[in-house]
Amino acid sequence: PSARRRGVKGFVNIIDGCNRFCTFCIVPFVHGRERSVPTEQVIAEVAALAADGVREITLLGQNVDSYGHDLTPRLDLAALLSRVHDVPGIDRIRFTTSHPRDMTPQLVRAVAALPKLCDHIHLPVRPGNDEVLRRIHRAYTGDEYLRIVDEIRCWMPAASITTDFIIGFPGETDAQFDNRLRLVEQGAFDACNTAIYSPRDVTKVAAYVDVVDEQTGKDRLSALNQIAERVAAAWNRPLIGTTQEILADEVGRTRTNKVVTVEGAPLSIGQLTSVRITDAGSWVMRGEALVPVDDAAALTA
Image 1 (cartoon, rainbow, N blue to C red):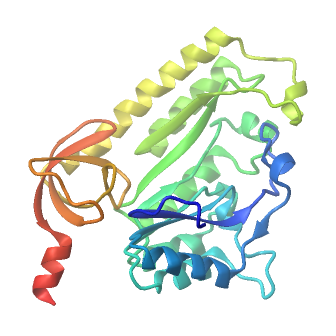
Image 2 (cartoon, rainbow, N blue to C red; image 1 turned 120 degrees about the horizontal axis):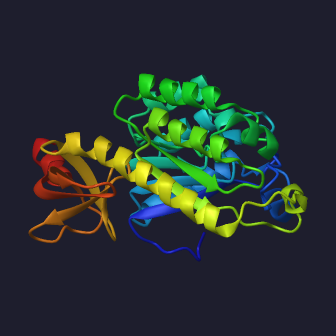
């Protein structure tokens, strides 16, 4: 922790390794099985960052939702989030990365109930076709994934949901890829991180021979990105004219993790500011600063 950059935002690792063994992933071979950081150690690190002026904390793990199952007494992520929520000086809390299999309704409700938890869930789907999901060992179907998305939007209507896609997994047919495109439309994601599959020698899928050729992978990536961009713009356009709270760092970000550039005078780093959104594209919004949230709070104190 002492080697990390001190600033407005801090990152705290809470669990290392992974027990899932997705067929494409090297993490279990490099980092081993899941090992949770003791709760008191996590809280102490968060408190130290808060004392250094950090206002936003992101709790990290390859499968962050699995936190605490290996601790004695057994704990869960919801309980840890509640403890981090009580640390003075922290205004915003995020966590990543979640596995859909471990994003339970109980966890969603716990996140919705804590005011400092940001309205943003990053939930990687990887492929979007059931057969490819089975071959990757993701342990859920496309419909099950969409039910989790519905659960999040039920309890957190203002939340943004972002995801990850792997393009060109060995054996993926054109029909299976088209099924993935429909999932992007159905999930209506605020943003999609996309990448073409690349093999890792120690993984199971490295032995697969039905490799998708490079040009097909590029064509599919382009098609997916076009739809993702259109869907993201559809989410952002209704925000024009609304007031959003941003935290200024290298860029300003809303509680939903959307990037906002602010017109006029530069914002003070580390300041929470209310911004009226004046324009919105797929990935960046523009706005004009109103009364800083911190100043308004001081005036009403």
